[in-house]
Amino acid sequence: MPRRTRFLAAAGLAGVILAGSAVAPAAAAPAQSGWGRPVTSDRTSPAEARRVDRVPTPKLNWYACYEYAECTTVRLPLDYDKPKGPTTEIAVLRVKARDQKNKVGSLFLNPGGPGGSGTDIALAAPYFLGDEVLDRFDIVGVDPRGVGASEQVRCFPSVKDQTRAYAGLNVAFPFTRAEEKAYVASSKAVGRGCSTTGKPLSGAMSTAEVARDMDVLRRAVGDKKLTYLGFSYGSALGQYYANMFPDRVRALVIDGVLNPHAWVGRGAARNLAQEDRLRSAQGAYRALHEILVRCDKAGEEACPLAAGDPLASYELVAKRLRAEPLMIDDPDLGTFTVTYADFVAFTLGALYGPIGYQGVVGLTAELLVLTDPQSAPAARAEARTSVVRLAEQARQQRRYDLPYDNGLETFLGVDCTDAYHPKDAASWPARAAKADQRDPYFGRLWTWITSPCARDTWTVRDSDAYTGPFNRRTSAPVLVVGNYWDPATNYQGAVSSARLLPNSRLLSSDSWGHTAYGTSACATGAIDAYLVRGTLPAKGTVCTGDVQPFAALPDEPEATERVEASKSALAEEGAPRRGEPKRLPPVVAPLPAVGTLTVR
Image 1 (cartoon, rainbow, N blue to C red):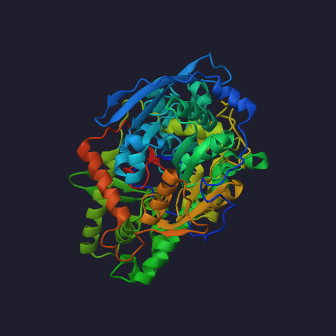
Image 2 (cartoon, rainbow, N blue to C red):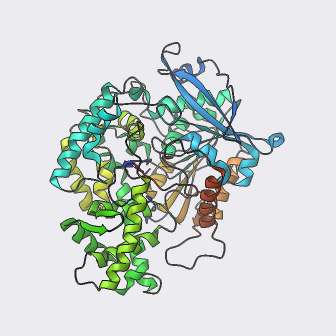
């Protein structure tokens, strides 16, 4: 929600999780136009300053890695109230500025998650960041505590124990009563494991601790103030830093924004499911609905569902799969099962990217044929071939049982420790059903993600977690970027966060997919201009994505070409994949693996 990169267990079909929410733009709070005017900011609290400033500046012993980068590790306090106590190892990677003589400083990146690898996104930076940013900044990625190449959180003593605990989670989301019962049981097992075996690290992974680590590392790379670009859940980290260290901000951009109050859940809201507060499903449903409406207007030549009523056709496929999963036998590849949950999860995956509308209408059209016993044999054969291909791709992406994969545990270690959640995991079936009534198809999916966080079973907490305020005035503006059609971080999260921050500027984008950077020259250029020169976009600016559903692609669609170029370059360079990156910007987002589809 983060939105985050959430994790979805998936069986059968898997797809990229992709695009979002139709809401009219709203005005942001008053903001500066740049760095030309003096500003009076709020100050870092004495308690917070004492925590981080008494930690000696780490010496970063960089060494060459991955051909064009530098790597290092540092040990930082597990508990900043005990600076000489136990430590945890933090991995850092940087790609040095191409123009060192005119370097501005360091740009810290976070890809989201929680659980996304900062070192992975920094390593990918040459393939998706703008040239001016790459020229003027050392790009720095930090793997948050517990994540990636940093000291890893482990909630179980062995893969065997983990596999047993996870047994009920091996669905995109539970739908039948049997699946719900198994999912609740596994959620409790995971919550207990992370609250016992996972300690002490699982109780020290809050966003506040990562913000403290980032402030110490800012000092270590020699920057007086922080320059930061955070995507998805990385927007939460950015807002935490801005409010904990408001006078230490040089330039801060958050793209794909979570409202921090909705993320945390204070007062009576702590008894609501996090999805009831964040409303990711609302954004996802609005995006799906708009695609199907545009499909109808585009006609049969552009959209295969336009032969009938696209909205009704999608619901018909969903209804048929709810009644009975689709079984497909392939003589070479075996049997594939496509469930209702698989269909919805694939849809959400497709909504994560600018051209995901093609996958949504394509799979719906094929399943419309395959779930109809009266379909013509030729049409069934063609549809079957396409669906089998998708299913086999998902099967090949599956990560197997060895070695220990802590991807889900990194997400939970942050979300469950950061935020408040309802007490009893057994209440999730009713909560998920209610969310689905409010936001069709996606309400269940987004609600079930946090079931291991139930307070009765996830009992470990961080006594130094930050819960607000989130309305501090920063020493430089915060650029808040929201995408109308984002299926993971609802556009309203950007609107409300901009209203919270008194020194912020809202940049809206009428684009498709999760987050806006890389979807158009307008959005990308505005973000780059602020990071490098401190120039904010004009108030009320709305960018338009290069790719719009069923419209002719421009001769050189920047977003699409950058996506493909990034993937190709990474493949050719052999850039490392230390596990699946949990959330990269749209231009480099990989296809998630079955078992842990990343979300916010």
